[in-house]
Image: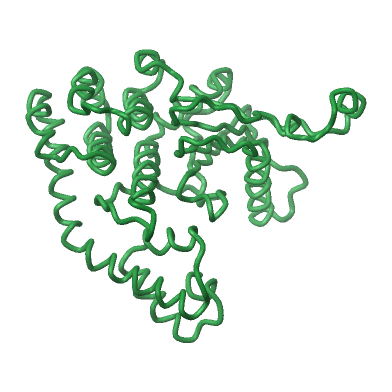
Length: 343
């Protein structure tokens, strides 16, 4: 398993997948901000500590790495993102697997889905290490940012359709596969801000759980004045602020110009981050229309040749780069399946 970097935040796009009314674009913004904000090892260690506090004294902080790829079901890529962190624990490899649920609806079968994702991690581990006879422990966690309280079972055993008496009789044979739940939406903003994590992770938790529901976003950001200054003063603060401002603009109606009066009072580091955000969004906006046109054309070609495409394929097409779309467009001429095009 190898280390990979989180993708850089991208320009705003409200088009998303056809028929999604911008839902895909917002989901992608959630995903990009979470991943961009968790690029730093300090934030990765802080995330592990917030989910599994007893683990922190035991782990080697310098060993934390991000594993390649995603394990999410293809049709759920618009509502879920994940992050697998490999750590050394008492000299043994352990994987902390974090799934972020962006939608406000609760998946009642999440415990089963989490087991499926863990098995995929082990399968990939065995492919990379075919001679091993043991696999690393996985510590699973679900981070939820919806406004409704999480009501799904947090252990696979609770999904099994058995009456209590029978379940008790068969207890030793039934799987017990729990996951840790962190329901950001049910935590008071001040409680989130009081968590003993890095300033950047604190800002991520607050913005992901609060921005979309704020009727007065600029007023809400005023309450985060001290948090933004703390992020600015920390190592990597400029990049964290750039990711935060990109996220805010992507999921709200507030522009970088409207943010300027507030940001002007926060000092040169914050001002420069906002200016970088504005410049990058403008630069990428000039090519956005061309890339979206490429994506729409390719999706139409896929539909004509192979039939209507599921949401997962649509999302993959509409989040591809111009170079990827160009390559796929050439492949479709001779491809016999969608997999041959997008492989």
